[in-house]
Image 1 (cartoon, rainbow, N blue to C red):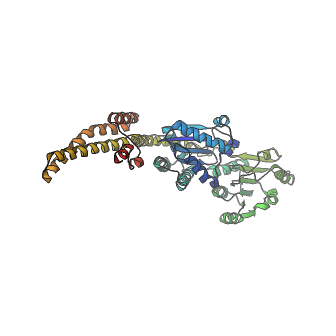
Image 2 (cartoon, rainbow, N blue to C red):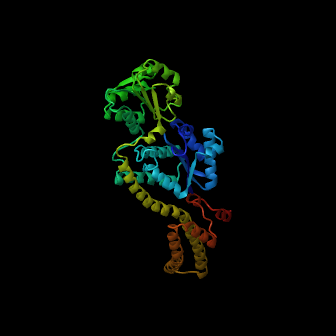
Image 3 (tube, rainbow, N blue to C red):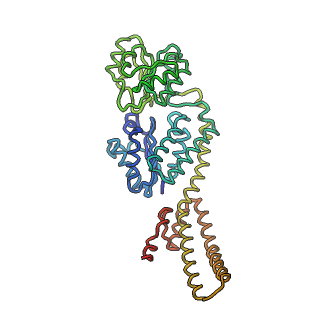
Length: 439
C-alpha cells in the first residue's frame, strides 16, 4: 500500500480556483466515502482549509489511484482534466510523508509557522476515522505526523509568537490604520476564526467591536466575551455606515457583501474610508467591491505580503524543524519498508511449519510405537532445524527492509519458495491451495 497526495494550495492556485475545491463539513462525509469506494483506494483523508485542499490516500496501484482522485476532483470542481492539471500538485510515497510533516509543522503554510494547521490536520484525520475510511497506513502516517508537529513546536518554539490568518488580518488592519483604539470594527461570523480575530482585535487595542452572525445567539455569546456588541445579520446594512473596518470569516457558500449594498453605504459616508478584510473561503465579499471609491478590500491571498516583527525568529526555527523532519522520515521509511517483508516472513514461517508437521507425522507413523520422550526429542529436532534454517534469510530480509531494496528482497524470497503472500487480513482466510485441499 502506497501513500499519495493530490492537492491545490496558495502556491499553485489563485483564490477563485481554490474556492471550487472547498469541502464544507456537511459535504465531507459523503466525499470521503465516495473516494473510499473507488477501486484500489484503501484509505483517504481530505484536508480542506482556507489555503489548501489536499487528498491523502493509500493505494495499491499508484497511477490508478492518482487517476481516480483526479477524476473525483474534476467532477467535484466541475473542471475538465486539462484545466485541473494546471493547478494540482501530486506527491507519491515518501514525498507524500515529507509533505505532510511540513504541513503539520507550519512550514508549508502561507504564513510561516501558523498555529491553526496542526488542529486542522487532526480534525481532518478524525473526520476520516468517523467516516470509516482510514486504514493502518493512514493511522500510522497521521498519528506520527501529529506527534511530530507537536515535537517541532515544542523543540523549535516556532509558535512562541503565535500567528494565524486571523492574527495576520489584524496586523494588516493595524498597518492600514495604525492605532485601532477608537475605530469601529465589525467581525462577520462567530466561528473559530472569527473568535480568534475578535480576540486579536481587542489585544491590539480595539475598543468598539461588533459581531454579526446568521445565528444571532452565537453572535451574542461572542460579543459578550469581548464586551462588544452583537448585530443581527439583517441589520448589517444599517450599521455599516458607522463602521471603519470589517473582517469577514463566515462559512457562507455565497457572497454576503455585494457591490450595490456597499455602494449605497459609501454614498452615505463619502469622506470616510472603509477597510474590508475577507479571510473566508469561499469569499464573503464580492471582489468587485474594491472598485467602489473609498473602499479598500483585501482577501486571503493579500495577507502573504504582511510580515510581522517575529518573522525572522520563525525562519530560524523553521530550519531546525527541517532537521527534525528528516530524522523522523528515516524512522517512517524503516517502518514502511518493513510492511513489504512482514507478510513474506509470516508466509515463509507458515510454509515451513506445514512442511515440518507433514514430515513429522509421516516419520512418527513409520517409526511405529515410540515413547512420549522420544516423540518430544524428534519434534524438538524438527523445530530446531526449521528455526536455524530460516534464521539467516529472515534476518537478512529484515535488514533489507530498512533499505530501498526491501521490496526486491521480499519478491526474490517469494519466488524462491513459491510463496502465496497475502495481507494480514487475507492470511486469516484459507488460501486457494488450502481451500482446494479441503475440498
